[in-house]
Image (tube, rainbow, N blue to C red; front, top):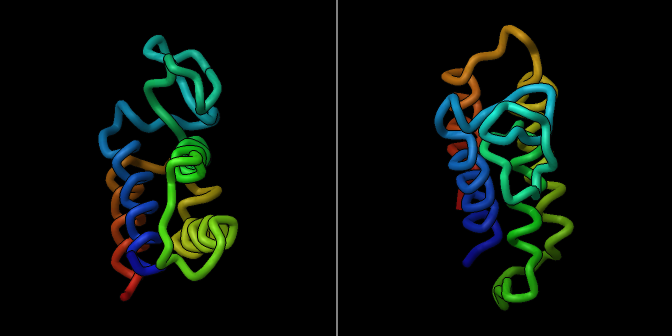
Length: 118
């Protein structure tokens, strides 16, 4: 897997965590089914903000089972590049703005993913 393919996969995984309005929250890393604030890695978390999704996907990719001999940069670098995309496409801190909406969130993710070329 190329570096950019992995970058695209990470962004796509984050998008999938937020792909419906009920899976996206604001002003908390995560919320449970009752809408109560919880930690992004809590088993009861049902919705996430962009930062919560970032942390959850980063945690998944840094598990000991994750290996990719073709990846030519360290995992820490790839998540720095993911963060750069989140800032470039204004996914953060915009996502917590009271006027932000889910359709725009998905559009920004789609634009960020589309900008990753092989």
